[in-house]
Image: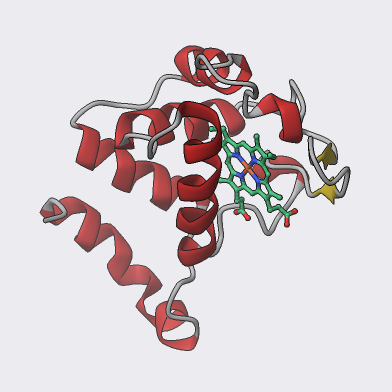
Length: 131
Ligand code: HEC
């Protein structure tokens, strides 16, 4: 169960939520992950997580770039990817279903498991420091 304050923080967005059931924001998502992890996200840890290979072939940066403020390039298909940093991509982290789908898929590719709530909170904390 999500702690109460996360649910409460969503109430002002009820109108938007009705219009678009999955609408969210980077800050709301981060708060949710932090609540689930029981600690605040840490940007320094997020950067290390994002740029490290976790015993596999790829890091998150392999596709998204070391500093995902510009377009990434898919390591396999070479297709361009939108910047992940919210300051450079207003659509990033605004659709919860999409975010969860890609976290699930990409974390399996990179860390061979799903990312923990703490890891997601760290990555989001870091991405939001990029200006
Ligand atoms: C093999 C290439 C690849 C790797 C490695 C990868 N990603 Fe992605 N990621 C993608 C693609 C493709 C998308 C969809 C982006 C698009 O359509 O522009 C995406 C999208 C995302 C999104 C959705 C953003 C949004 O709001 O739309 C998140 C979050 C994300 N990636 C996080 C990560 C994290 C964290 C890692 C490391 C654990 C990672 N990715 C590693 C290819 C990759």
